[in-house]
Length: 287
Image 1 (cartoon, rainbow, N blue to C red):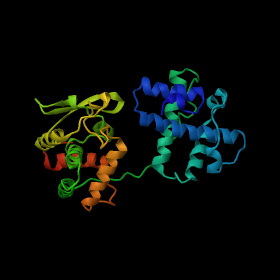
Image 2: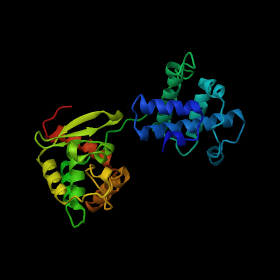
Image 3: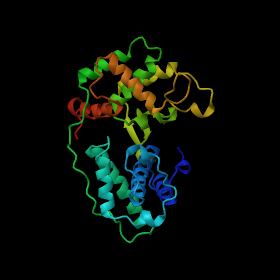
Image 4: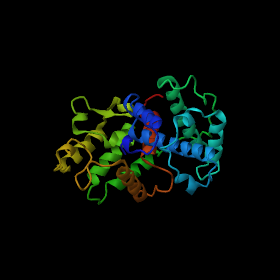
């Protein structure tokens, strides 16, 4: 969604534009900021106007008319009251509350240090909820091989799907990096691949024999898009359009099920954990 389409006060739009254009945050991050801060401003308006805090009613509250002085005049108690409200909803987990704390901090740091509208952030002392740290999930080497064997089945687009999962397992790339791969970013002479990562920063990964082989097989059958702007993208849908992140998630989910590995919490991001773990355990790569 374009920021101009967000239904929110100017102060919030200015912050979102700043994070997108100056700080280089991804659109997904901007959307997350908007969702978190929209909820906070709805809570703030409901509190000030003594409205019901029932979730359906709160979702109907418009925040476009909130005065700047209301946004700038919050206290630490307002922030803690908001977190207490979040804790009473179905979003009651430490990770969700921590993300909302991060969004609030970023917004009010911007209002104080960048926009110059506050001398100091009113929530500078806001504490982050404790999170229980758990070890990241990853596939073992045998499970990774089972997944690849499952992909290399009767699927009409098995070359594409095999290439996708091979890259995820071997290169440790993010989902957004995978769908953004362009044909021109593959450097065959030195067997490297340029990825566009977080904050639009480029990084390079090396391609092993499995990756180069999978890429060659896929490119031999890759259809040529009819739309000019789509021709540079490596991975295409059956409609010859660039794959979306959600479609890649579905491809991974489908093949995990074929391999008998579904229901274990695996995802494209877990394949990134797998790549790092296997490099460490079997590839002689240190931390």
